[in-house]
Image (tube, rainbow over the protein chains, first blue to last red):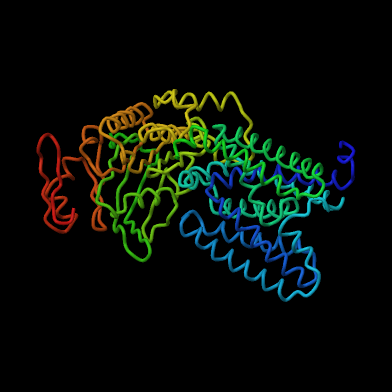
Length: 270
Length: 262
């Protein structure tokens, strides 16, 4: 069994999934705290339209994916904090993008396997070069979040006071959504556009119910994210042919459910 | 108190013939007043008279349509690090992972870049203001569990970490019951006198503040009046301000403002 874990494609999968899980867990904490979980669902779907468009034009899907999710992220950052109106705008744009994606697929007559890889993830087919790219992008994201940490936290929880103290609240909002766009593009390799939500929101949402300080929540979130992807890849390898993202999504759900129901904060909400 | 300012120190706030517009509508016109160090000012007036807008003007968050504004001797926004601002009651969601200590610490270094590694000096300064507002026992509590009054004390502590010369408090009594109201008022009085900080306290009801404040700034119908409570809260002054008959009634040891548009 352990021999399986030495196969190059499994090693690539473990490395890429680990980088993506760490980045998604850290930026996911801020996403959840800012009440932007719906954007975390919409961005990958909008990114999917970009990927389908890129396939149609004959370029690498990841470029289309990144362009579209970055554009959508920046737009969400500009919309600001009126949550009701924001979620409606995001939903309208997301369904429009999904429609576009469908159109691009219908126009594309070739072999659409790459598009399905974008939708459901292709973690067991990661090249050594993609692993390196993921490592560099992840390091970059973590450095950006470390640099933004204090003002980002301030403007997440207390925007009017932050603005009065000279924190560039709007700029931070846009920068943060750009960080989310990169995170989504990395995580899609592991989970696919339809299931990125699992990696981005699952660990962070669970962590915020378990501990009561931002740093602790981020660390617990990272721990959960890593546990999900490692266990998921291991279980998929052991099962032979069942998909990795199924196991990761299931693990995230199975851990979140009892925490949601049993944590003191969860009970209050019920 | 206001007349004791030294001549070589600039006033805390100085407005001269200021007009403020929001979305094309004139909120305030011909605003002229000066506030000195350590003065305690109640900012009164009906909804929409421009009380919160005035605080935002002083913070440089909105520009004046015309006139001259100086805050701590500079144009607004330049010296916000010497202003403590407590915005109107904010909903901080209950399922969020934030303790009292973190909320207060935003006031110390929330505007600095970088991760901000733990430091003993920073911790000591946060502990010190927590003590000043009687909130030591709230330091490790999740903010979502606290009452309105407890949150208000933490937000005041956050504002004090700048060692402000000017405190801007926007409706700190909103959503508080009578006994909590009394606690916050006593706390602000103590802070104003012991720190010699100028306070602008926005409120709907002058009565609980009446014994404490040096002057009141009354905003209504795009105009303003400033002076001692005895001078401003009179039937003549407020009728002139509203441009319609207003009666100030004293009953049960309280002051009531009665009128068609009040």
